[in-house]
Image (cartoon, rainbow, N blue to C red; front, side, top):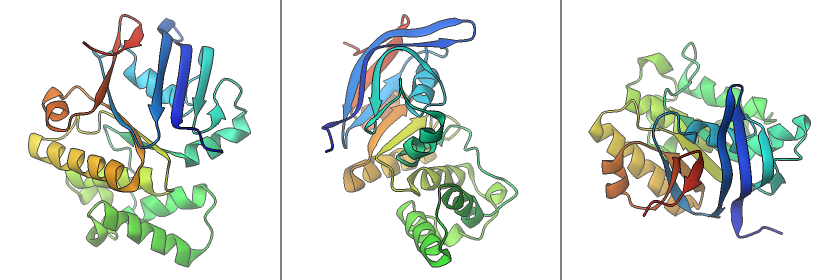
Length: 225
C-alpha cells in the first residue's frame, strides 16, 4: 500500500569523511509535491540529495524513500531504489561519445529492459515529453547546453520514476534557457505527478515558479521564514 509521503526523514544525520555535514534532518515530501532545496555552497544540499538515492550513507535517524528504508537497504536493493528515482545533474553527465538515443538506451538496458521495440517506444515517448524527439540521433556534445539538460531530464524520466532529484539543474544555463528548463520540470511535475526536489541558488526562478522551500543551514534543514 502506498503511503501519502514519498520521502520521510526523521532526525537524520549525514557525514563526509572529514566530519558531520547535516544532523537532525526531519522533513517529508508528499507524492506529487514539488519542493526547492536552497542553501549556501557547502551547506549540505548535494550530500542530502545523494543520501536520498543511496549514494551516501545515512549515519543515524530513520529514512524512508519510495517505500524503502535507507538505513537498512542492502547493496543489491539499491538498483531497485534507483529505478524509482531520476537524478538530474548541473553538469549534465552525459556520455559524450554517444548519441542522445544511445545515452537513453544505455540506461534502459542497465536497468533490465531487453526488448528493442519497447526500448525504442520508451525512448521516443520520453524525448517527445522533453521536446527533443528530433535530436534522437544527434551526438550529445553537439547539442546546446539547454538541449543537453533536456537529455539529462529525459534520462531521469526514462524509467517512469516516482521521484526526481535535480541538483542545480539550471546552474550552467543562461536565464532564458533556465526558465525553459524550469517550465519543463514544473510541467512534468504537474502533468505526470512526479515528486521533485530541486536544489537551486536561483531565487529569481524560485519567485517565478513558487513552491515550498527547504533550506540547508547551520548543519540542518529548516523552513525559511
